[in-house]
Length: 420
Image (cartoon, rainbow, N blue to C red; front, side, top):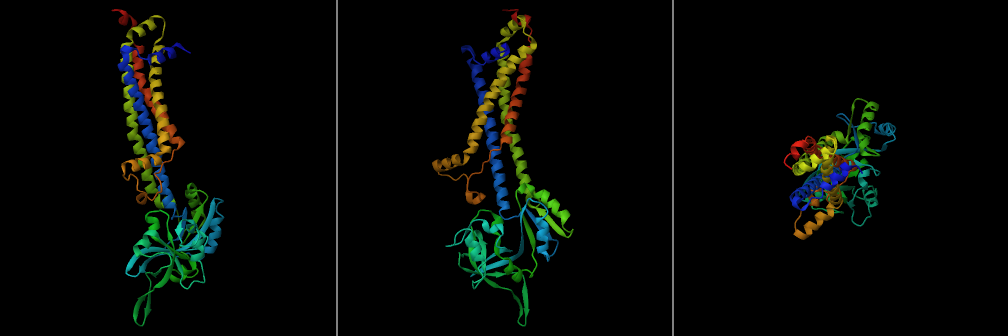
């Protein structure tokens, strides 16, 4: 081991008269550790929230949405084959009919976007309350049962609460279409039976939709043989932008092709910007801790004036003196970064259990699952985020050692030993 390392590590062990310097060193390590832990924890929570919000959006929004500008799609069967042949990443393409309607049950009224889907639509694979029927087969069997006297409808939990209905109850669906009769203009009304209620937590996206069969929607709120659009499901959501661009080139200019990022990308971009802002703000904690490292080294340099002079007179170069004090500062920074990384990752991986324990002990509600639409406190540790925090903390600590180390290297040995 080089003598610079031996001396630098020895200076970390303070003598009895240097206890104050040792305390400042401990505070510096603790400051770096807390700053690094806070950064890792906050970034993991923000990543978890971002992923949770994205899953809520994709719970009712397709990866890519294809629509005809200002009109329905008449030749949708032909377009389905064209869309599926664009790329192997296209998992499925499903037609749908959509229109805003009013739902009426007794004296209770609710607005909804009624959507006609086929039996293979992915939306029917989510969680629903179907009474005695199993999941998810019960939704498909009940909704597409041709023998029932009244057509079935699937509504959201919030809508069911507004209408005060449950599985098996009847509701009236009123579209914005009117029939001209000898008695005047009469709105179209059709009774439907509630066959399932959505139980998945998707916020406003799920609360606004109701589902019926594609054939019922075409005859009731749409036009026979036509659909409102085609939903494209991909192997992975990250492929949406590229597939959307390919579909724009494949389909006619009259078609509107939008990825889920085009529809909700600005909202997710705001979350990313907030994550960056928190990273910068909490990074200041590490900077403050690095100032403590600089203060510690300055006090050590002032205390070791004689030692520095003796080392210089014995042949030590200015570069070696600088390395001695940089090693001391870096060891403080590395120790704090290592402790903070371990603490931050541990907290991030167990934050849900920690929040639950605090809520139970203090009898308070910190994270309300009904408000955020998530069944647990979100936290997702990303390796790249942890590496970024560690490298950032290391660089800040390294910069904090440069000035005190250079000050020690410029020390004049003759001046230091004059009065000894």
